[in-house]
Image 1: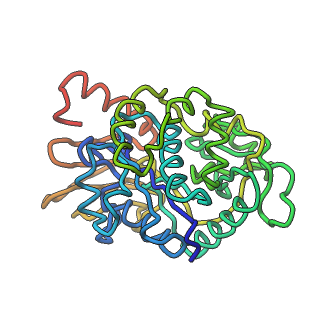
Image 2 (image 1 turned 120 degrees about the vertical axis):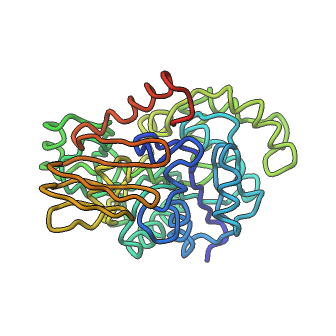
Length: 361
């Protein structure tokens, strides 16, 4: 195993679209959605271990989740858990992690993963990551994975591929990024064969991504350029405490990937879903003859079709006449919502917080 290869797993998100299961004190990356006995975060770590050794896995999360991570991943070294003092999206998180890793190993290459995605084809994932790391280790390149689209999904960003990279089948220059198109544009993207879903999985060397921050997001780069060596020392936490909250809240896509001229896409088929919504979980789950999904719960139905049932606790659901609904009950909160309206869940969570406070979110 190549000792210069590292993995950064971003696990500080709130996952509000999965309310009421995903809560502020225990978001979806820490939940066992499939009854496997492992959370999505634990499955993500297991998936990357054939490529990156356990000592080279870096977790970046909000300090609120430190105890959960220590409980779920006791094999990860304490020094490999980077605790954000504020939520600032993915770009600051990635910049910090790259500085930390470069201080440990100036020759490092890095794969950056979300903590809460589903990958069914794990061998294909491993092969794609190994090829991608080899690609970025042999040039100043930023690489993202593009998923072969299976439908005109409007909930994903899209990547348009350009000219092929020399000597690497399946890797091409990126021609354009498009954020969450409307359905007509998504259909056009699908029929063209040039567009792929943006999986939010990135590969680069520590040097390449930090050079990109200097060039394309100098405001963030300046915040994390320490005047003296602090990364991977006992001075790092204090420096981050002061500098991290000053960063703009911006995604790596907007900060770097859509601006840089050395961005490539590796097109893959991984059996992938970002599990970003209840409908995404519905699509990824086994269904009965009526197209209903039950997540670890007891259900009696009459004339129900295409409905997701998810309940925590010893409770039975009896439902009649539901077509394409979400029924999710967890603790002190119950969600009953048409699957077609699930994009409103995040807005509803904000309204609950404004009306009733933090108790229910």
